[in-house]
Image (cartoon, rainbow, N blue to C red; front, side, top):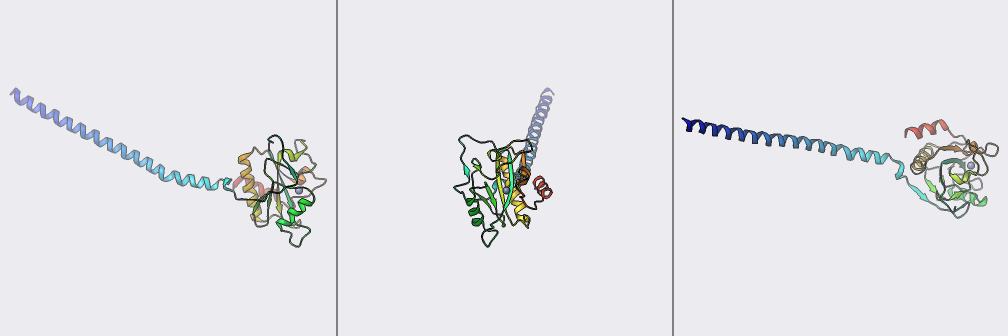
Length: 219
Ligand SMILES: [Zn+2]
């Protein structure tokens, strides 16, 4: 009788052990499959999100180097950039007002420059390195009363006739460029040339600041 009890007792223990082991394995598989599901669902979402973010970042901006040799100087110390000045100009001497080489030749005649020039097709040309001080603003005064504006600003020229306004692609490229600059520098002011020199300057002509500011906010 004692033997029988101990036999059944042993069987019961074995069955319990097998069940316990089975349950442990089952739960382990269940947990790891959940983890896999989580990680695989994360994996399937993350790269897509990252790709979207990266493609939305304006740091993949295409800029065509067309560095000039006049109209700026190379400072001995690193300058701090906190302002963007928007200009407009066109080739008034040649037959094509949208001629990039023509307008650059005019800058040369006046020994002036800008860091960037956005042509009528939206191509962004870099004429002067950001670190260099381009002669684009001339004498003027900032809203915070600072002068010598070239020292701390980036100048961007938009190429169009004074009877016109920037076209859609120029607005888009300008916004992209400024967003790109904002990634590199703490930009506190984005102003038109006429805002800092109202008695001398009228550019950027017919510029729609409301449209620009909305694009800068949203895009
Ligand atoms: Zn100007």
